[in-house]
Amino acid sequence: MKKSHPHRTNRPHPQSPHRWSAEVTKKSDALTLEDGVFSKASATEVAQSLKRSADHSERRKSSPFRSAMSMLTFFINRAGKSLTDARRRILERAKEELRRLYGQPQLRPAQATHRAHGGHSRAGHERRR
Image (tube, rainbow, N blue to C red):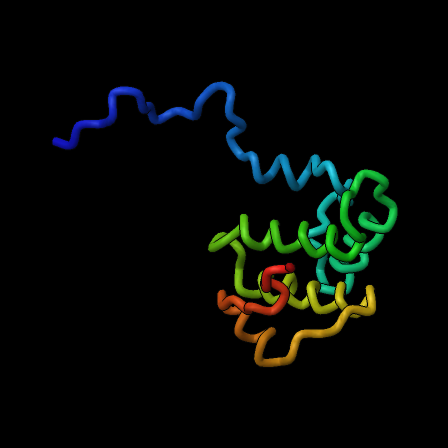
């Protein structure tokens, strides 16, 4: 029989929030999101909602584009395997739509496909000196 750690229990710690990532999404310091933003029917609707939230926020510390893209990426990463393939495709397309709405360069097709399937790109991750 496997012995459990003497200080661990199967219940959540009373001071720690059970679903902290859901709270971050609901009560972000940077953006006030519209209800259901990540479950909207199309990538365009998701992107337009995030853009509205980012453009109207006075609490964000970064550009509206970066704030909107960060929140979208955070949601996708935290949802992980619980996202259906269809929902993940919509949210990945919402990234492309955000880039278009903000006049940012689009990823090349090979980069977008690779990243949508869990790959990583070095673009944008170089160290600034």
